[in-house]
Image 1 (cartoon, one colour):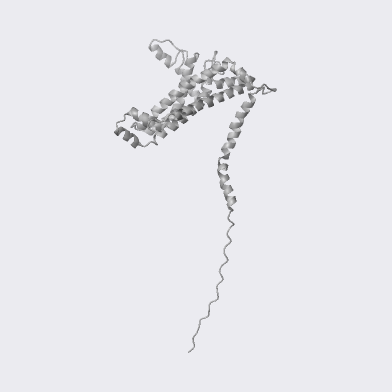
Image 2 (cartoon, one colour):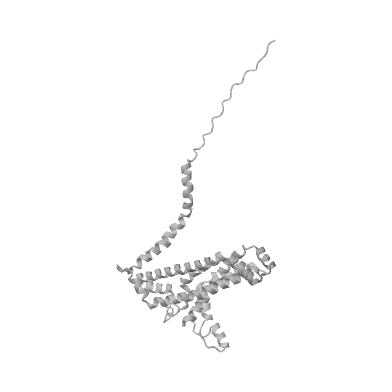
Length: 324
């Protein structure tokens, strides 16, 4: 008997393995991962160095010279700062700046906090509409705001003097008096910025769980107690932020006093009733072309802003909530 054997099939050659791209070495990958975050944030620091740090350092440099923009620059050391400390105009501008800052910052932050609390808890129809109207003062032109407030504070035809006349008081010349002009400028600043600050507080309030307020109400806490022990401690970080930013902006106020004074805009009146440090700087630099002295004023203003902002920050951060 014959057995038939099937032929053994020929082996099929396996396809050649595809050539994979060379993997990046661990060293190269590690370097790229380390450099990438710095490359992402580099544009900010480059722009800050060009438009922020360099002008600041150059201001310190110019303050050491008798700097004439079209003449010679003579090194005089600290003579500009010595002259600054002996200049009564500088101290008058510093007092005006601090006065306007206090009269505008404290009411602005208090009003914004109270209004944000009201808008958050009140049951209002069209609540979104009322919240968005808070931005109307912020987007309004400063020139238009100045015109309206100048009419309201006018000595002869102003609304406030008309109201004072109803109670038997004489008219007040707000523009030509020191305290009156400070109150008028502070009212303008408060009206312009309190809506923006209100929205910041309102956004932070919406992050607080309503169950926290409900639990406090069940425990017998009243409205004032809930505001004091829940709202204010929860808003502490944003309050610190608004205090610092309001300090920086308030001490650098320029546009409002410039537009309020019509006869002498740079001196803000014949006796410099509302001249701030920024107006004094602008007067000396671009009015009298004493760039070295103006730079010294800028350095003094920088030190004042940093010092007061740091004091406010430390005071705000050291206040600990009672329930913690």
